[in-house]
Length: 248
Image (tube, rainbow, N blue to C red; front, side):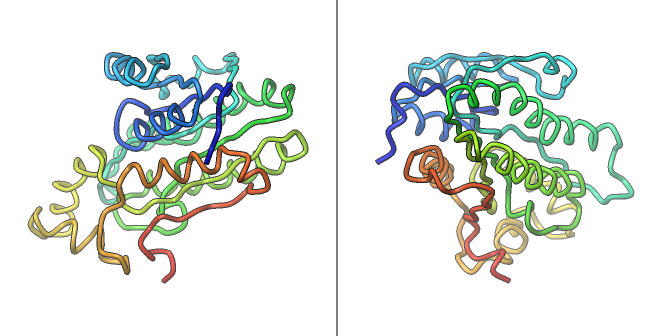
């Protein structure tokens, strides 16, 4: 069992989907959890439910994070957005926003948290990557680029943090049953030229040996284990929960 009693955790994008599941699981393991999200009302509701606290923050405003100091033992970089479009039609500002939220913000949050982790000689950074951090798909240039960047950041944190008792790992799920996934269906149907009710089977599950969507609590279970002392020698790794997608 994972015992995080006395630990303080921060989960970005914690108001829904994978983030909410992670916040709940970490709280159940004994951590005091800060639920960070652009939707402050939703974050406050989750925080109240799990006995934590909320932080309303726009992670695309990265300049505001330059001088941030974070006093946390566990940092889960989960926040993300998606845009599905052919590369030659991809809006430059949307590409930049995805990079800011999913690469720059994790860097700045880790930068803010590491000094405290180093002083205590203990820390856990878990980056919610994706199968798209290891593989590419058409029409997702920004998302795939961001997740690949997050993988590199995670490994660098692992190398620098190791001597200080800090681990850093990626969790790489396939398509997870979340609002973010559901919002993709119409765009995927349009760009692949198929009906919306065929997107999950023909696009999202096409590369998987196990033909089912991942549930948020499955991701949260692995995240919680990576934050525990059972995983104290696990760092610089990428753990897939992808139904066999990346086995190809």
